[in-house]
Length: 129
Image (cartoon, rainbow, N blue to C red; front, side):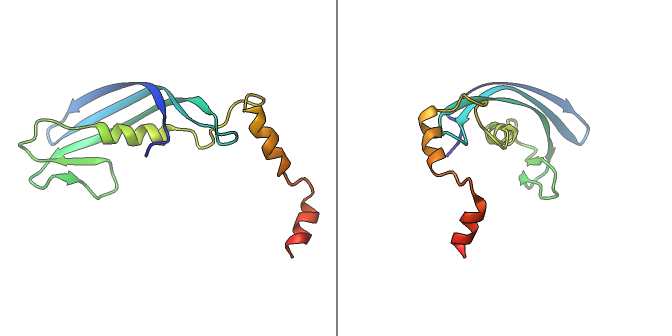
């Protein structure tokens, strides 16, 4: 299940054909809607990244396990489904911390969270012992 509930992302794909392989360069730019880590309301975050894949042709198709983004296709294949790769690249481009700008979070949720905020860590640590 995806943590992205909506998006508008433009993808530019360029392919360079080499003698032994194909080089695919991807440029993603737009926004994705995710939940705020603080208040759980939805917010739009910018998504911008550039990445690449390599495609080589061999009788044993699948993914190469040498640590690179290499896709192995059969010489008879004429199409490459990029859906799963785009899905992964968009998720990897999301920021680690997804929060509204200061003061823009859901005020009701912030009020509830502040009820459980520990302000005196010394007394909290003594209660744990």
